[in-house]
Length: 295
Length: 329
Image (cartoon, rainbow over all chains, first blue to last red; front, side, top):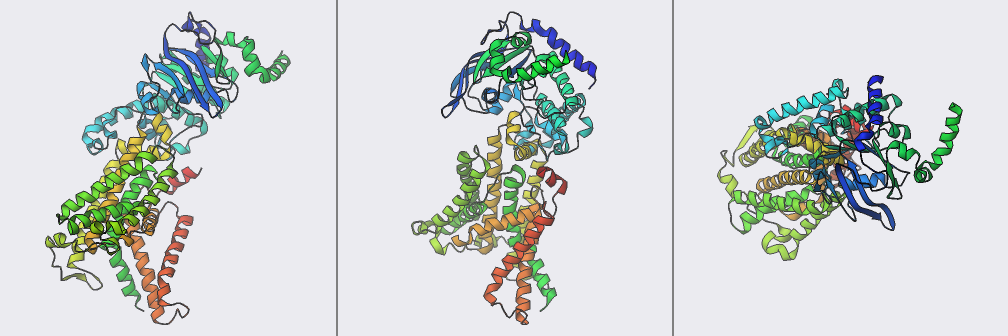
C-alpha cells in the first residue's frame, strides 16, 4: 500500500463532512439517510447494565466510529446489533427491515457483516477456502446439493473469480493456497476483511480492526476502509486509537457506561467536554504533555 | 510359537467383518469430530439403536431384514435430533457429556426388565441373520480363502457387504468434503462464530453432521447384528466408543481414509498382541502371568502404542502434520 492511497483516504475522510449534512452533533441525532436505526437497546449482565442506548442512527455510506473507555459496552452493542448476543429489550432496523432478534447468520444474510476483535481466520483452511466461505446462496452448500458437482461447479468458478479479485485488492493473492494459520496477524485482519466482502454486504461492522496490527499495515488497513466507504458501503467500527479515528471517521459516536454520551464530527468530539471527561480524561494529560513537547 | 500364524491371524482380523463394522462406525465419528469438531463420546449408542432396530424388527416383530435396517437408521435419526437440539447451540462440551450419558442410559434401558418383551433384556435377541444368509451367494458351510487367511461362507458374505458399505460411505465422505458443504463443515470445526458471521446457519450444519455420523454408526450396528446373528446389550459398553476414538486418531481424524486404515491397524494390533502373549505364554516365557491376565496386558499394550502415536505422530497415520501444528500455534 503506498502512502498516496493513505493520503487520499484521509483526505476524503476530512472532506467527508458533507456526508453528514443536516446531522446535529447531539446524542441520538437524526440522520438524513440512516441505514441502521436502533431504539431502546438494552442489555444487562446480572445487575450491571452493559448497554442502554436510547436512539442511534448510522448514516448510509459513511464511516462511523464507535468509541468509549474500556467497559463502555462497545463490543456488547456490536454483538447485539449483529445478532451474536441476545438483547433484553429494544428494536433496530437495517435498511428499513426490523432485524432485532435475528440470529447472527440471518443478520449477515440481510447485508450487515461483521468482523471480530480477535481475528477469526479459519486457520486450517487455505486462504482461498476462507474467501469462498463468504459467498452467499451457494447451491453446493446444501447437503443434497453437494453431490451434484456439475450443478455447483459454475457457481464455484464465479465465486473463485470474485475471491481472486478481492485477494488481489488486499494483496493476498500470492497466499491463496497457504493455510490461513500461516499468515501474520495483520494479514489475517486483511483476510477477514476481504472474506467479509465476499458476502457482498451493504454495511460492514469492524470490531477493533487495528488491534495488534503493526503501524505499517495500519495505513494499509485505513486505505481499505476508506475505499469501502468510497464504494458506497457503510462502515461502523470500534477503535481505540484516537489518531486513526479522527483521521478517517465521518461521524463519531461516544459510548460511556453503556449510553451514548456524545455524537458528532471529529471536530465536535475533540472539543466536547463530556467526552474529554469520560474518555479522553486519562489520556488527555499525557497527550497534552506530549503535544507541548512537540511544539 | 508360530509367528507366521500369529501374523496371518492378525491380518485375517484386519480385513475381517469386525474391522469393517468398526470402520463404518469410525467413519461416522469422523464426520462428527474429524470434520465438524463435534465431541461425540457416545457413538456406541448409535450402534446400539441400529443393532436393536434390526433385532427388534426381525426377531420380535418378524419383519424383513431391510425394514430392520430402516428402523435402525430411523432410530439414529431420532436420537441425533434429541441429542442435538438441546446441545448444539451450546459449547462443545455439552454434547460430549450428553452423548456419553445417553449411550449408557440407552444400554441400561434396553437391558432393563421392563423392556424384556421387546429387547430380550439381558439375554438380548437371537436368530437375526436368516434373511441375510438366505441371499448369500457363497456356500455358508464352506470355507473360502487360503491357509490361515480363510473365512466361512457366512462371514465372507458379511465381510463383502460390510466393506462395500464402508467404500460407499468413504465415497459419500469424499464427495461431501470436496464440496462447498464440506467447506462450511470444516469452517465450523475451525471457528463457528466466524462461519456464522458469514451468513451460514451453523446449527443446521452441525445437526446434519450429527445425523449423518449417527446413521453411519447405526449402519455399523445393523451389520454387527447381522454378523453375530444375535445381540445382547452388554456388548455396547462405553469402551466400544473409546475403541472407535482410538481407531479414528490412529488412522487420522479429518481424513477420508483415516477411519478405514485405523480400523484395520487397530484390529491387527489387538489380535497380534493377543496372539503374541498366548504364544509367549505357551512356551513358558510369561511365568508371572495367568492366562486370564492377557486381556488386560493386551489393552495396556495397545494403550502404550496409542501414547507413542500421540507423541510422535499426533496427526495419525495419514494425517497432515503441517495442518496439525498450525492449530497448536
